[in-house]
Length: 192
Image (cartoon, one colour):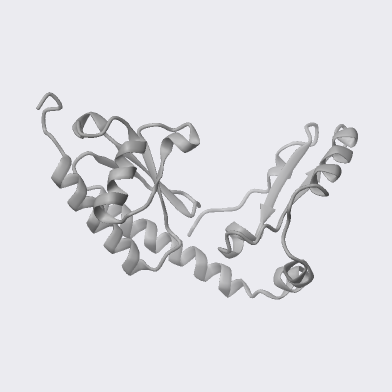
């Protein structure tokens, strides 16, 4: 809330800009496999690449025909109030998770700015039972049934990623379980 959208294509008239979008993030429907690329190429510098993109799109498993048929209506008839509600829920969940996790020793949450997930720094040296963020996540799943992705999946070691699209009470429960897990494994002196 309060952030202003800037169209990437408005930033330059010289360099081609590819804007990627899809239903997954805009409508919170992972797995629907309906996305697109909008090409802003005023000087036709990507003319040959566009042929390759079209060929690639024909080979990749995409969404089913029902979703393809519904797309025009989804894009034109979804009220703005829906999108406003999604933003409010994501912001509320991000605020809740941030407030809960910033007090947990060994964790350093990063408040997102427009994302449907949150990155959380893990001071792995304070958790000597775990060799890295992947091991931390494996044990978090085993002990607390809380699943997040290790930052290493994104070339961002030392972090974990949680999603913010679930209902608020689930965020609260997951954060409480993460806090219990961290309290149990945190060591003030990593040599202990």
